[in-house]
Image (cartoon, rainbow, N blue to C red):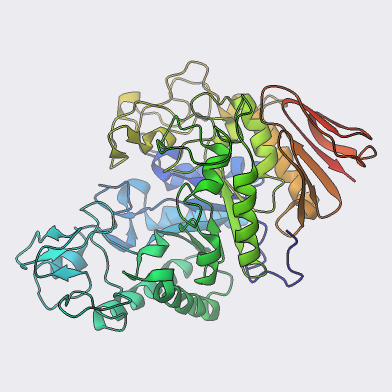
Length: 531
């Protein structure tokens, strides 16, 4: 697992960045309406600068009817009024850049809202092929809502009609399967380039692309989808060479080959069907209810020690070899669709070793807002703006308001709590940023120290090699031949009989020691050592 000597093709500013995800409606409300906004994010940039964040990915903030929390875009060139004005956004971008922080937008590339003017026109004009229309019922298609007869193909919810980027394999007798070079697909490619150029010209530094794999239909191996994204990236390289593209794909080997600078390991995707991420964090007490088919009976970061890191390690080896020298793999704590790190039985105390792993592994770390203070996944919330996928699977628990302080509204908003976008965590012992900022022993301070150590010791970042020397409890690995990391996510102490590390010098440890005979780590402990 040694990186290529060739420098990554990722822009230098992003090549070893620490990412932070902001769900804008839940981060900070500046005007007292109960919904977070741009000015609220700007007001808390000092928190992100202090923490050591390099790039902020903001979930969709375009004009939208919000049937899917903004992933149903009604106008790609306008911001949603509930988040503020163009001037508010410009101030956010400028103030972030002044602090060394770049802003990434969430680009919903594969579909729009059914209220987007493009779709409203298409639903009344049989000659318009910007969307996928069939003249008879077909699997997955929905009846036309307009005067146009026929059926349209949605990409996710029915309110999200799929933009037409063509089919890799047109078929006789199915005229809706247009080739990728038909006029409608070409128009949509041009539109994507125009949308990206518009926001990059206004200071945004790149995009996380929603459902990036979904554009060209019936595309085995994503060959045509890869051609499309590589074409768009070539245009970015010419006009905006510092811009980055990060995909929601869950398959770095494919996504980086398709032109993305980085791809997230996700709870779905890839030949391992999301196992790389799920086998690390998934307590199956939040957004995931699927059967467990990984090594061990539980995830690796499990208090009872019932998991194994080997599923993750095998997936990592394959993905990192495939992207070597061409892009990066991002490992998130969680996201707006997947359970928070602190979920179900896992406590903030257990999150300490998880962050020690995340911030010393050669992935781009991505912190979901609030995970740095141990915010928990809140169960049993109402279905809000499409948060409930199916009964019993509600993503709202990962989207609750940021807990800034210990006041009744948690510093999120001055509005009455019944007007908050989502309810606050009702736990009277809920963590908050202000209290943890005042406590040097808090999770927040630990995350800051780990980020600072990662930046001070480049061998702990994406550029340093990783060699696993023990793959049980504890997990022990060398970084760049100069550092040793040991993490023990279980409650009981663990020891690895790996000799030769007795002289290792502690850099940041909690209950870990190296002896001539091996490495011992207390329960929920970790250690980072210099060799």
